[in-house]
Image 1: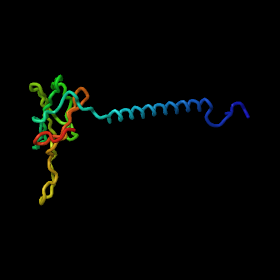
Image 2: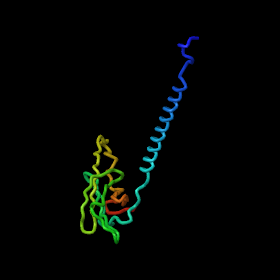
Image 3: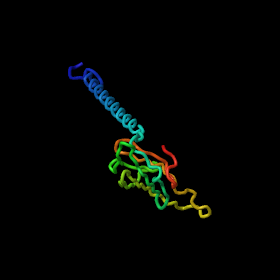
Image 4: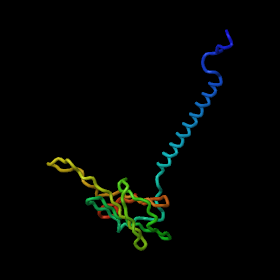
Length: 162
């Protein structure tokens, strides 16, 4: 056997050590990614707490069907608290983000939220469209302090508080 011939077949111990380090780094990186994703999912599943400073006025709030489903929510501040238009972050009706307008009116804030309705097409001529537009809205107002106010509204006003 001459000195110029390789003494072993396959990777050297140094190559094996480098490959083991590379594999270890990849496993650590994958574990970190899995932990970050799990934390992000966990945080997104935490429910938003109900507001202790704001409530929905039961007499001025209602939803009405039409060309679009529109809900008006009157928010009142509890004694010792103040509500302004800046306190309203977003509004959802039946789980759908809405276009909303927020107006200050004295001691309360009026939020008008609208969800466009999708017209029913290709309905059978003898029975028409079975799906009726919504007349009840599960309305959630998200506030900038990380809390929410949620009610179920109909044409006559509040049907239920969530």
